[in-house]
Structures are given as C-alpha cells and as structure tokens.
Length: 548
Image (tube, rainbow, N blue to C red; front, top):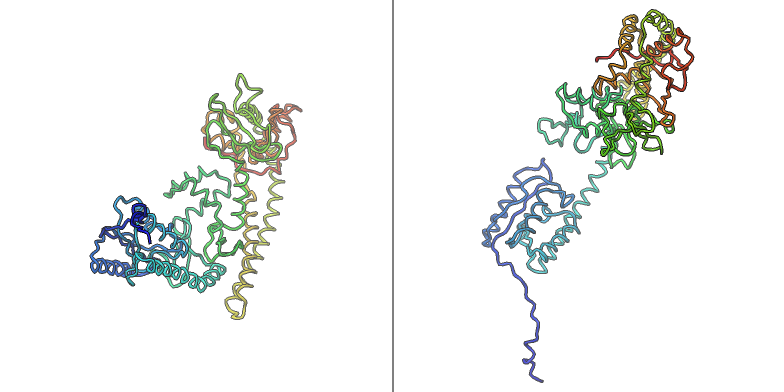
C-alpha cells in the first residue's frame, strides 16, 4: 500500500463553529388571560433552576404574557424574541422553553423556524422540563417530534371545541370583542367586572350616543355634521371609525362570523339600529361612492351631494386642477359629464355656481305676492294633508294589529312549554320587521302643521334674500339652503348648461308658480329649467326655515 500521508495536505476538514457562550435566553407564555399567572412564574422558575444546574446565565427574558399559539408571528413577544436573536451581535447559546408547546403549535412552521435558528442563526433550543436540546441530531429530532405533537394536540382540541364554537355562533352568540358602543358580559371577557355565567351584550352609555348617530344618518345628515354633534355630546370618533360603523351589520343585530360559512344569522344582542334602517344607510353609502375619494366638504365645491348625472343618475364628485386652481364637478362613471364650478375667462360656458345662483333667484319672493302665496299654499296643503292623514290612519291601524299579534306570540311562548323556539324566533322577527317598516313610513309622513301661517312666513322671509344667504353663507349654510329648496337634489345637463328638476320644496315651488301665473309668464323664471311643470302636493312640506 502506497504511503497516503503525502496527500494529507489536500484533505478537507469540516470545521464547525461551536457557540461557546454560557448566556441563554428564556421564553415563557400562557394561552389566555384566564390562565393562572402562576403558570408563567413556574415556567420561569424551572428555567432558572435548569440554567443553574448546567452553569448557564439567563441574560434575557421574553414572553411573560398571554398569547395564543394559533400563529407564530401573530404573537408580539414571540416575534420580538425571534427578531432580537437574529439581530444580536453576540448570540446566546440557546433559548430555554418550559415545554415546546409554549414555543409553537404550528407544526411544520415551528420545525422550519427551529431549523433556521440552529443552522443559520446558530442558536439551540432547550425544553427544560425534559432537558432535551438540539445540540445532537437525536435531540433535534425529539424537539421536532414535540412540535408536531403540539400541533396534533391543537387539532384534536379543535375537533372537540370547534363544533361547539360553531353552534354557539349559529345560535346567535358572539366570539371575540364587540364593536364600539357595546358592553360585553360573559364567562371569557377580559374585564373581570363583566364576567358572567352567560353571555350578554348590551348598548353602553356611549352606545346610546352612537344610536342617535344612526338616526341622523338615516335622516341624511353628512358624516362631518354627525361627528360634530357626537363631539358636542362628549363622544369623539374618527372619520374612519364612523365609516366603518355604518358598514358593520353587527349594529342591526346580524352576525356575519367566518364560522357561519357565508350564512348570516341574527345575534342575541341589542340592536342599535333596525335592519331596515341599516339597509337604507347602505343605499345612501352606495350613492355616495363614485370610484375614488374626494374632499366632499371643500367650501369651493358646495354643490357636491346636490348635483346628479343626467345619464346614470349618480351624484357628481368634485375635484380641483391645482395648477390652474380651478374647481370642477364630474361624474366618475359617464364620459363627458363634467362642468367647471365657476365661470372663468377660458371656460366653455357658465359655471355650475352661477347657474345655481340664477336658478334660486327665481325662487325669491317679490313684494306684493305674500297674500297670494299664502292662499296658494293653504289650498294645496289641504289636499296634501288629507292624503297624508288618510295614509296615516291606515298605517296606525296596521301597526296596532301587528303589535297585538306580536304580544299574543310572546304570551304563548311564555306560557306554552311545548312551543318551538325556532318557530317563535322566526315569526317574532317577521312581525318586528313589518312593524319597523310601517313605523318608518308613518314617521316619514308629514305631520299636520299647526302654525301653517308662521311656517309660510318663515319660508317667504328666507326667500326674500335666498341668493344673498347662499352667496355669503359657509358650506353648511349653502347645503342647508340647497337641501331645503331642492330636497331631492338637482340633475345637471352639463352640455346644454341647465338644471333639470320637478321636485322642489312646496313653499318655494308655490313662490315661483304664484309669481309666474300672476305676471303671465309662460317662460321658465330661472331661464335654465327644462320643464316648467311643478307638482306641489307631491314634493312634501319640508321645513323652509334655516338658521343663517
């Protein structure tokens, strides 16, 4: 055999970097707040005893709180541990964990992370309760098996608890936190003062203020006004928070939990708003979104929310060409539907604001027409109120009948032990929805005006300086005037530069018609309305008063 020693200089030797540090870190965790803090103390104490036994120094502690192991990096303290150990210039020899189930329950995810810590970061893991570590291949395999076992335990636990959780949600229960405006009582709440044997979710004191906000929204008030009013009541809410609330069906008692597989159910908590009103708000929101967001409260564009597209019927949005400092109104859906807000030397035609000023000028009362106006409105009001009063009687009768049926249903359920709960819930909800719908229609009917003369005088007084109030008022004043005179808004023909509407507040419609008839004018008084026909009785008797 030839001498091989001559080739030793070519032999490759695998050099392994061995971490000689005696410093170790410690990580402790419990799953929920309901678990005893003594468990955390025990995990920490056992780790300290292990370190002393083998001559290690625990230089850093992580965890010490409750974090669910459903995900690894959804845990703040766990994420901090991993980030810190990766960034550390001088690495600890190992991370001490009481049990591997405290480290991770994700199975494959935990194993992958373990491999990364050992092979790339150079840090080992130690399960102190069994004294198994990853310094050997067999120990590393044992640690990985324990991580898989933790995942298996999680799956088995879910197989037992998940059906119960799903049934709880299907029965109208709530899992997780409740949105703002509610007090949450139950067996697993964080606030110990609210721990109860059975779950109960009720409207809080702040919730009563938010309940009023829902009423304002249904009435059509813009969000910035609602936020101002809530602030006056002592409740502050962000624009995003209010927008999120409008879109959350929880507030009308509907659960859309992911465990329901896309099938909503009615929850066992107090409604802040009726289902009908919630859906009405969704329609309002759909009408307010035209693609991208604009500043709806820009004083330079007060007609946002009042102008509608003649093609698709959507509300026009506003925008500014910043280089030219020129404002426009535009439909985000239909091409070519755009108009400059103000008349400029380079604009193709009269601006929307000047058109509007010319329009409302036609609704200013002239001297000598007040007496004729009063008689005109009184005459049509009698016809209008009779129809409204007749409808009101029918609605009140129908509501009373439904309420009697609901009362009878509740009485039967209370005294008949064999009465099926699901049948009771189904018919109870059906009756409540019908009552809510009819009640809302009844509330929307115009009540009898006891001081009709004062009402007409107030409208006439406003109309005497209508244009002046609009020109000199702030954005809120301008919009109050717009909503008062044109409660259903204005359709604008941007090509022919004219407004199209048949729906005008009854007082202002009467002002225009009285003056037109008295002066024998056949032409539109505003000179830019395409249809001179107005229906007084059909427009509604909206209040014509305005604080300016």
